[in-house]
Image (cartoon, rainbow, N blue to C red; front, side, top):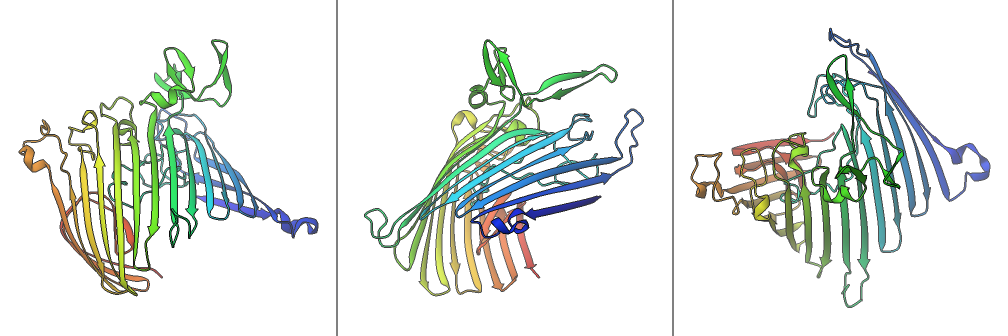
Length: 423
């Protein structure tokens, strides 16, 4: 691999605008990988290049940035040895004012898998970074069904607004109230089949332009429905809707010792695409409503007790009844964490899958045993960049936050000891 990246601050090139409040920045990069082609049936590029250009405009609280990347054709395991080129567009803009802010991010990704070994998959040997336009939750149940960027193609966006109700108002009280509203969605690109007559394979292409259908112009990234392309169908055809998340978060400080966070989230999760990578995997899509309450009582400097409870509610029609799923009906989570001082903490945690379906043909275990409690005891010591933690109990896979640190953990049952340090 070899690569180069550069950035130019336009204001610093010209004296006439060097003191301007508006800042202009442009940049670009180029990366190339080398891998010998050893497939006897295909002519494969040994050098695969990817380049991008970007800009950023900043003025006071306003920020606008965009980047476009292009990758030459790179047949791989991810795209089923397709010779289609790859490209991606990412746009972000934000504005921050007195007590409020707005954020919008959008992206279009098409065939942008780029690895140092074309035969690899999952998270192995990735070269490029494809930013997520969905909220990365830090609470266990809200992160139970996380979204993963689809390398072969997706169109997604996220919009967020934050507002702080001022102190001294009837709603704000003595310390004010912070409110965050966020909505994100990701769906697939419309794919046009392209046959490979020589190899007997079927590939696809996508387009950026507009197509005249039934006397109207519709963006061709839209979903095929009843023989026509209509942008409205993106929201209603669940096969092409990959992920959707709406949440509202309220943070309130009641006094010098007590503060609380309340969150509500509604999530849509396409298991066929996100987990199996196929529209026809046969899984049910998940719709869930999540509620969270997090209360911290700081009884003296450096010492606090935190209470956390979460609920995940799933409609009966979306309950998973196969052993491959992570969503099995309703969940409840509770935790009590005691920060003894700035160094020591202990926590007791229980995650209960109380809504597990009463019948499960995939398992010979009695149904009552499937409504599992994940009890966990955790204790640790923090000292600067060093952290020692010990835990005992049963833990489900996902995001776990305790002692002020969040991490992605695998499913486990037993005793674990971890030591982390940063230098």
